Amino acid sequence: MRLQLALNVRDIDEAVDYYSRLFDSPPHKRRPGYANFAISQPPLKLVLFENPGAPELLNHLGVEVQDADTLQCVASRLEQSGLLESLEQGRTCCHAEQDKVWSRDLQGLRWEWYRITDDTPDVARRTPIGRCCTGAATESC
Figure 1: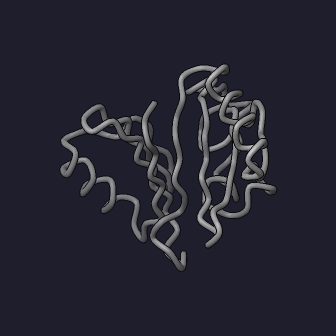
Figure 2: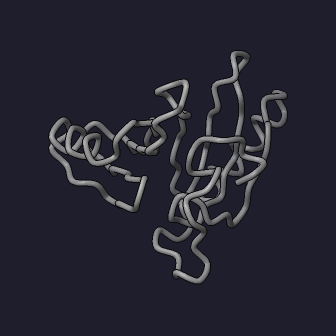
């Protein structure tokens, strides 16, 4: 398991340069307006969305899990506690196919628990950067 920090940035090239040097790590994945870093120390998935007009720097927070059982346990726990906002299965978003569980705190901060099922889906199934990759509501993802 590792935490995910998703940020809105004004300029993706400047942000990639900065974070590559900050964590001494190249991006794991780079697309127009998008980059993610799979950092081992500290264990962090850093996701950058080029979104210069965003009112907030923080896009959302997340927890990446490695298996379906863990994700199902999280979904069940959040549903039982009344914190489950939505589930997404087999969603191609942000240049990977994923299963996701979403929650939103009382101030509106979105939390995503997810597992990647295909880190490089074929081009025909890949969705362009859209609302899910810019931090808009997950319903449009």
